[in-house]
Length: 329
Image (tube, rainbow, N blue to C red; front, side, top):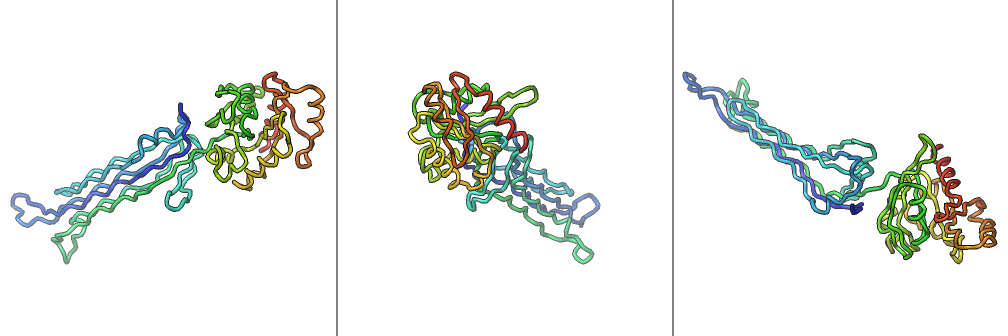
C-alpha cells in the first residue's frame, strides 16, 4: 500500500429543498386553504475515522464530495425528503484544515471519531407555514438554503509513542525491523525510506508501544530540503524521540545538534519531549572505538546507547529505556 499523508479535497453540503405553494382543491371546497409543504434538508458532509486505514491515498483519485440536495416540498402539506449525507472515512490521526486560512478545523485522533464538517442547508417553508388570521391565503414560500462548501487540506500525522530521528542511512529501518514486526525496505543508500514505517514493539506481556521510523532528515529539512519537511509532522504526536546517529560519523555531537536544530526550527515544542540518544552500527567498529564513543557527551548528557541492530546488541536495553519513558507520559 502506498503511503500518502497529504491531500486536498473539495466538499459541499446539500442545498435545502424549496418550500411549495399550493392550495387545497378538494371536492366541495372551492377555496381551500394553503397546503404547500416544506422543503427537505440538504445532506451533511461527515468525517469518520477508521482504524483500518493508514493512508490518504484514496483522496488522490476522489477529490470532490458533494452531498445531495433536499427535495422540494409538495402539495397536501407533504414535506420534501432530506438529502443523503456523505460519510468520508479517514485514518486515525488526520488533521482537517481550511485551505484558505490554514486553520485547523478538526484533529481526528480517536478511533470511530465523527465530525460533521458541513451541515446541509435547511429546507424552505411552504406557504402553509405563513397562513395567519389576516393572511389566510399566502402565495409565497421560502427557498431552501445553500449548503456550505470548503476546500480542505487533509494531513495525516502518525500516532506513535516513539519516533526515530536521524540522517539518511543511520540505521532506522534496520532498528525498527529488529525490535518490532515491521518489515521496511532496507538498503545501503541514502533515502531508502521514502515513507514513514510503524512498528509495534513488544517489551513484555501487556507492555508494548508503537514506534515510527521517520524518513531521514538532512540539514535544512525544516525549510523543505530533502525529504524532511513533508515528514516532520509525524514527529509532533510522539511521546519520546530517539536520536539515531551512525557510529561512523565524523562528528557525532554535531550530527545530534543539527538534528535538534531542524526540529527546533520546525516546532520548538519538539525539544520538550523526552529523548534518547543512540549510536548505531557498533558491529562495524572495534572495541577500542566503542570505548571512545562511550565517553562522548551530547549537550551535557553523557548517557547514551551504543547498539548494533544487525548483531542485536543492546537493542533490548534500548527497548526497555524507551518503554520506561513512555510509561510515565
